[in-house]
Picture (spheres, one colour):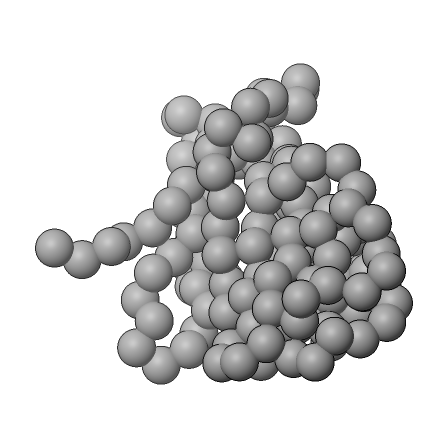
Amino acid sequence: MRFLHSMIRVRDLDAALHFFCDLLGLVEVRRREHEAGRFTLVFLSTGAPGDAAEIELTYNWDQEEPYDGGRNFGHLAFEVDDIYAACRELQAGGVTIARPPRDGRMAFVRSPDRISVELLQRGAPLPPEEPWTSMPNVGEW
């Protein structure tokens, strides 16, 4: 058995692509437009060698209301080289750090569609560092 992808529905495809590609660093590997069904599928990958798993963004063209229940999905998790740098870059892009990396190892953010995204430090945790150690949690993740 081989894991293929996780699918999440997005209401604003441009905002979702900005979050996942521009801010998190994923790359679009293929896109399928389905005129008859009025939806677009966009597949994203980390681009890392040997990492075949993908995220499928499903954009239903006629969806006007926000999707609810994003927390019921669980979360996506990504390993990062420097959790502090990743969080600084996300913050600079307007993303709220819901669970700061106080321990130098783990943080949570949310996509524009409220999908929880866990960031985990590759290897050993980084030494605790401000402003992260004193930053409170925000909302839910």
